[in-house]
Image (cartoon, rainbow, N blue to C red; front, side, top):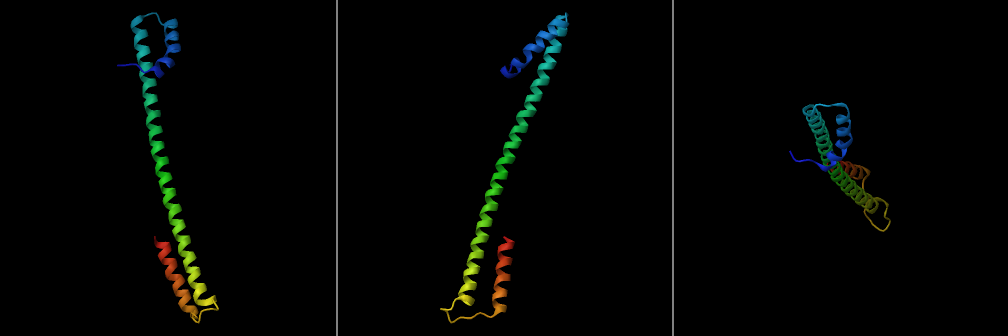
Length: 117
């Protein structure tokens, strides 16, 4: 197995401690290798977790963009609805006068269209 420089750096003081307290060279090798594998596995888990977290962050950013876009579209639709209401009811320059039920109906239909998307 090829070594990892990050793990080799971590393992240096471990090797010194093993050699200080263990005299059998086979035991030294076995203990060192098991510790090395444990650190490698831990680093693999950390790397995998970081990749998953990065993917989740990217997905959250996409969801936020979609939500902001939908919110802007809803605001535009509400603004158009307000303009339509003003044109029909509040604009003295127009001869059109809307019946309140028609305006209420249009508002309900607009709310259903905007809320369902």
